[in-house]
Length: 113
Length: 108
Image (cartoon, rainbow over all chains, first blue to last red; front, side, top):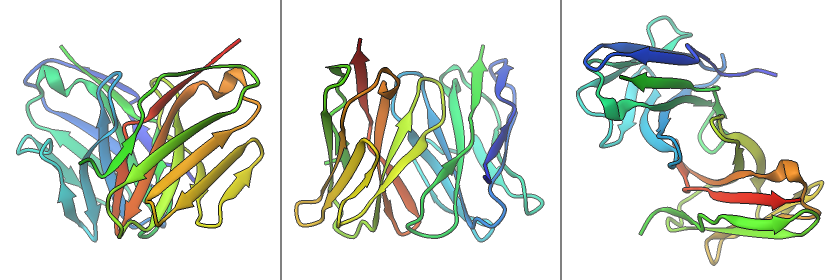
């Protein structure tokens, strides 16, 4: 079964450092998403990406965040200068088309110390 | 009002019982509806899509009521392994909108 893969599974970083979270969506999918989930809280939307550009972003997705799809397979989330409150699980998701089910990666647990 | 609302629970239910969750959505332009299951520290996984005609998958039954803008999930003969958070997910265009999730604990 096709799957979304994310690396690393766990990242520990010092406050102020840059991190890049990587995702490989399902190959024929067209829409890509990043979500985050702080432990014990709800899944929060960060950004959606379609046709090589951001289609929507939330208030959380400020200037510290950026996304790229550099090579047609990887989809990355960069946090430029991490804060303690960025500690969370980050999930990548993709869908084949509007209205279809979303497939999620296993997540990257980001710990900022 | 949030676009997708669920009772956060927790629902504490004895093994073998039947449990039902509801979810309401506010935007009538919503197109597709899903129930996802999420285990602690894991990614959400699709449990089932929800259709207007209602659909069943083993012990699980999902229903959609477009007129009242709610969806439901019924779990029969609950098992210990059903303990998880159940997420109501609504798609509108390319947006995927999550409810906060309902926590279910099945008690032995």
